[in-house]
Image 1 (cartoon, chains in turn cyan, orange):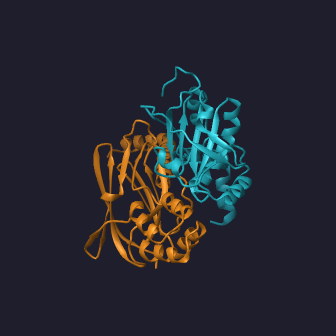
Image 2 (tube, helix red, strand yellow):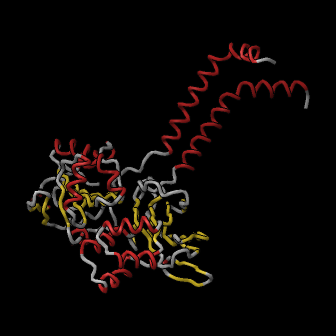
Length: 190
Length: 206
């Protein structure tokens, strides 16, 4: 069989085969994407313990306390510039911040350990404009119920820990933002 | 088999084959996706010798860190050359990501307690070096606060509970000499159930 005759034998079937191949590719891609979807979600903290208060300096040297935001929902993130999953989630935190501040939700990112030059450089590279606080000796991180970086907590308007997330997340995901916004409603319990 | 049965089977196969083929391929695609989805969070590239495993609610990735990477990381955090050399000679540092295998909120949490893990080196059973084990060393060497804080948080937590979708990244120090080969017995709890998995023939960086 020469090449021409082989091609001509297939030609009448091409539209069907092509459509089948495209459909198959789309379905395989969807199934694979579904199977590889990133971790997401907040874990409710049922007992809602009081969030330990703190007073730390921000990058401008101003003192900021958690209690300054009593009555508001506050997202408290612990991170470090050298921590890969922390770096990975920062762009989504910046996107989430755009949505959160419009809804009167505060976000505080606490850098564990002090190295202001590296933090400044990081904030510039990632174009972050949410408040960054520095916990130079890890005293605040040690006081919170956390073991590793990144760890993030959502504090309700009563100053209690309502949700936690251990490890990075896509913070602008609607499934994560919805329960945070819902905490503004005083009757909502996770 | 009669000729009409063969014809019927052929006819049925002709009718079913596109859907059947599609179903098989979709199942394969999903399985492939799961097989590739052994990442426990955002760990970056752990290199070609990474150990990846999932089971019993646990997701684990670990890979030996080269001396250059260990030196670069800890020197960058403020450790002096003596302390860095100590980490390299006594540490056997592995970069690790450990977390919950799934994201079903109804799944039981898993609990990791590294004090229950065991290393087997040439028949000898040993424990790994946890965060707490290093603290007296840093005090003795008068290591400053910044590197001590970085070291603490860079190491994988000795004890941690993971809810579905949780994971953590960190270094594990096995406390062995460069080039040592060992088996690692990982112990964890899935809800109330104790789980054990043995990983054989791991090797510290040379």
